Image 1 (cartoon, rainbow, N blue to C red):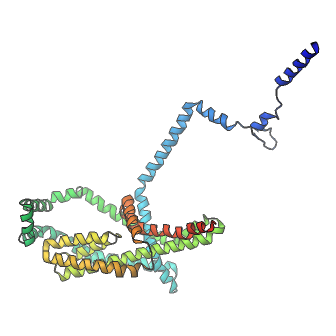
Image 2 (cartoon, rainbow, N blue to C red; image 1 turned 180 degrees about the vertical axis):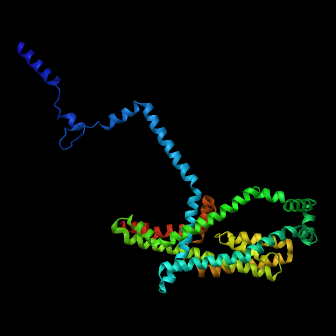
Image 3 (cartoon, rainbow, N blue to C red; image 1 turned 90 degrees about the vertical axis):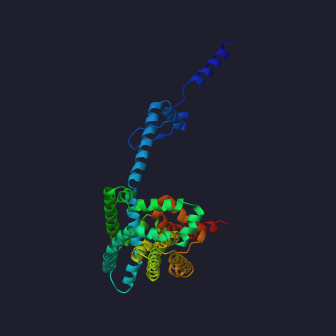
Length: 397
């Protein structure tokens, strides 16, 4: 009996004895060993998580601080939106001028002299156009304001006005009178622009923005090759030849696309000037400038100017406006089926449905800049899918 008692006590003593440090504790808790220092026992992940949950004030402070940092970064990015737009316009201008510089390089000229010649020609053309057109445009705008009552009076004597009045009643002359009163009131014209001071500030901001974009585009064009080489270094060494090939193809297509848009906008302005001059419609130079500025917007710019040009011509002569609308619509078809394929064939190839979707998405997100870059970005995405994603999918057997 006494012997059995002793055996049971010994078994209880063995069970209650503490486990050595190298047994289960070491297995469940990882140890970090540093040369010349004793091992450091790290707390398990479960214990660390429960430590944060047991300190709700510290956890809430860290979460709030992270949220404030994220909000601050978002506000900083938003406040720098104008800078991003300047940089994007300058980069696209540099990509658009790069093919011209490369063509000069192929004729034995250095890149530096090619850039100097391109910007010198661009500056001379811009100054010449402004010198010839700007005084005429200002004079024609003033003449338009002076002649607006006479134009409205002449429009009231046309059959179109009589038909409109018969259909809609006496509201038509009342509306014309209100439009004439509003447009001939200098106070309303100032109100449209947000006041004389804000109009001046807007003009100054636009001019300074153009100067910034021009200077940035000059720097980008001069260092375009260095920028590409720096971008290639971000890729692994084994992928750099492929990344370089893709980058050259994308930048080349973007530059050719922008050059093609400028050429098509120039054709639109020339056609508009000739039609207005031949049909003896008012303000041919002004409408040519408006045509260039509007039709450089892809997809919808030509349609918008067709509506604007026809409405302006309608005040001068309904018959001439009808002729202008028909002839310009005919030119739109020629541009869509003849000029655009010839100009854009080497630049970019995007299905028509994706062109529409890309232009709508880009215009909605980023306005004019989004509409300009939508088609090159869509083409770049299609190129990446074609040369990266599809070959990887084909390799999976």
